[in-house]
Image 1: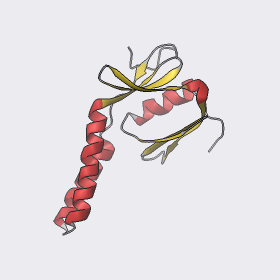
Image 2: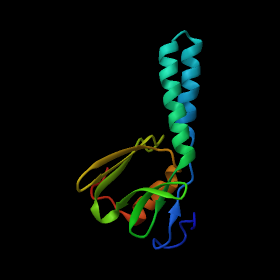
Image 3: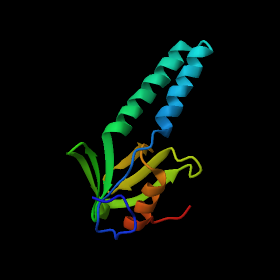
Length: 132
């Protein structure tokens, strides 16, 4: 397994985790708690902790033919590129959400992975149909 994009799309690329979104949510929850908004702080904090757990445990792997979602050694879900119709990363300046559409379903994922490598792998392995 490699984490370099220098190799061709036949190798597997595993994205490194990004903790940006969970950390911002947890800090936001602390701010909510300090300004007297305990319910909002608790909700935002729990969501931040949930996303932190997901960032620590889940990995995206780009293979030659599929995008795989794995936890440890277990394959949770496989998304074959041949079924993809389109993809998009929302808010390029501060990437927050990754969207992709398959023939039968639509997926929205928070950016819990290195956004630059994510975009490079997507452009290399599954070019978008439409432009921005």
